[in-house]
Image (tube, rainbow, N blue to C red; front, side, top):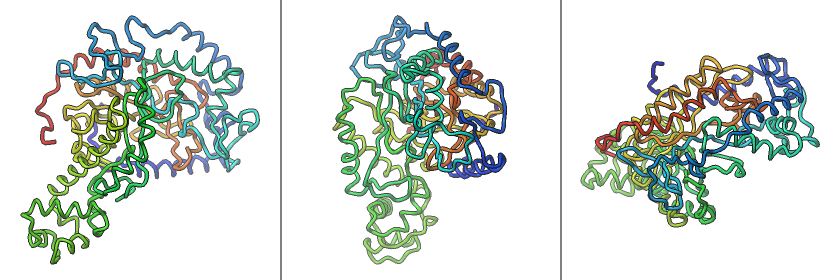
Amino acid sequence: MEKMKPSNFFLKNVFRNFSFLTLALIQISVDGQVIDKYGQYINENWTGKVTSDRQLQIEYIAENNDLINIRLDSTAFDQYGGIKDGDQRSATGFFRTEKIHGIWWLITPDGYKFLLKGIDELTYKGYANSTDASNTSKFQQLPSKTTYADAWNYNQVNFNTANIMKKYGRNWKSKWRDLMKHRLLSWGFNAVAKWDFDPALGLPYIVGLGIDGAKWITSYSNDPYDTNFQVCVENTNKSKLSNSKNDKWIIGYFIENEGGWNDSTIQVLLQMDHNLAAKRAFIDFELSRYNNSINNLNSLFGTNALSESALKDMPINANKVPSADKKAFIKDASKQYYSKVRYVIKQNDPNHLFLGSSVVPYWQSNIEWALGGAQYLDALSYDYYLHDTQPIQDYECDKPLMNLELSYGCDGRGLIAYPPSCNSFSDRGEIYSNMIEDMFSHPSFVGMGWFVLYDEPITGRPGDGEHYQEGLLNVVDQPYMGLLNRVQISNVKLWDIHKAALPYSTTQNQHY
């Protein structure tokens, strides 16, 4: 298919507003009731739609019988999913990265090459699978709070959990885990990319970190120049890092999901006074570029400051600042941010990788932010849902790259696709094959995470109302085989595809 160049049209806040609007229209279209007692869309029928508990139970027996003999081939893979291809590398006891013949790889604790083929929120009870049940008129029938207590959290209900309890019966948790292990092996997935997961599945995983108490410039940009920034990073994460440092199954850490700096960050900070450390740092940065002359900056900005301190208190029109200056300062801010975060991580856990912030290309960050501090990252992570591989070209900087959130969905059955939409449920598999094989054909690309295991609820997840059709399974625990048949084929091929990638050229993006 024709590749699309990303544009500002594809902004997440546009997606969110679209989600809320569509949710409202769905609710109106069915005169109040939106979903049946299994969490399925009440106003549409399709082949396989669940109509009884017995149907769920029969489907479990059939799928379990089909997958029961699938096992990890220990002659072909190590315990972590690394491939035994006759090229064992140095075994450090923890995941690491290595460039071999110009191609980047993850290396398992046992020393074997590894590609992250992960799933986000690998659990039946994830945040994205619950919905507010306060307005009972939306529901044909809610699960019993007594019989299905595990499906409830105050006024939030998780139909996935209730359906799994009905489907698997006695010892439902262990049965779900056993079948899921076989499913993952069959589908070719080998890790948890992000968010919640069931640790009993025994997979390599990535850990998310946050920063509490730091000074914010915008809702997605905090101030790494603030003297308390590094202290906040350490206070928030020291305990988690120290407790995790000996865990061989952890691949690495990302911090502050999808945050960063962009031109809007600069516009906001330029309106602030000297109490914002980033504003003071900006004036110092500009002075160093213009011969330490206040007169030169006054001429540039159209200001009339009599001193450096006065300029730090003045609002400055961002349009007066040369684009090259803004880009250079964002690069500097990125270095400040990632160098301080890296220091805290490595001081408390020297064993695991630092994977950046899972930035979203062209939204809430820009290329200067993503690459400015790349020297402090072990790999660069991003989240990208569009049907092209543009970020790989843009972010190529002789660092391993990984897309930790991607999925390809379609509209239907009461759900909407995260734009752009696939044409049909089966079309999702074709898009997956085209995209994932293209990604892993790049010598720097070492990992992906499918978002998410289960579809979001039709009545919207808590907080933001998202109700995207993006799962590998639907709300009644049925695999989307039109997608997964293609996933199985492509995931097996990725080793050979990546091994055959053209070696990385060190001439790309050298200016970062």
